Image (cartoon, rainbow over all chains, first blue to last red; front, side, top):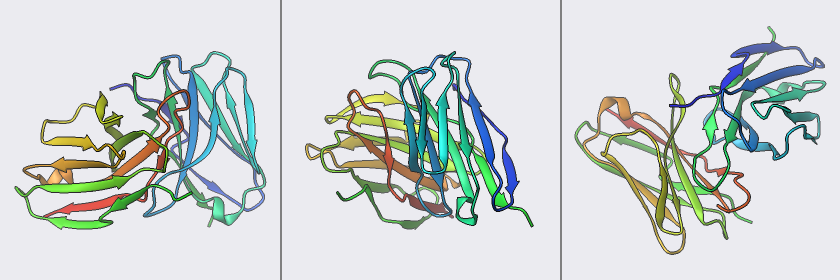
Length: 112
Length: 113
């Protein structure tokens, strides 16, 4: 089935560093969502984007809806230990039909 | 507002058995979607119900089925369980119209032995 390409697959962070990840698709999406999942829990919605070019922040998190409508980016500024987890992007095409498509996730770990 | 709840949280079943999982959406949400999450495949969409009707369906065999009740609560059933059905099953609810933001429950961890 249709999938999103999310990168990087994993990354190590040191406290205070900025982090960037992105998702790309071959299809145009009307909605981009970013989630974070902690072990043993369900994904938690972080940011929702609805317009091409839209830039939305949630605390230290900032996400952008790419102008081509085929990509989205998530940045985390000044990372802290509790930022570790798996971040998923999800996209949806237009209309009520069609489900959310999820990326495979970016796993954030603390640099040893 | 209470979040999405799923029961049970953990389940161990034997191959060949069947299982029913339950999901109660956020109050006012009419759409419930089900996902299977495994380390290798990530989040795979099973189906979505909206106002008691299946609105979308993923690429899973007919052993996977679901339904939604008039109060928006949903159940999914897996019959003739296989070892490969071991996974975290997540349900997510959304308003279902205009906004498609989905809010996930904690999941049901199913282990098939």
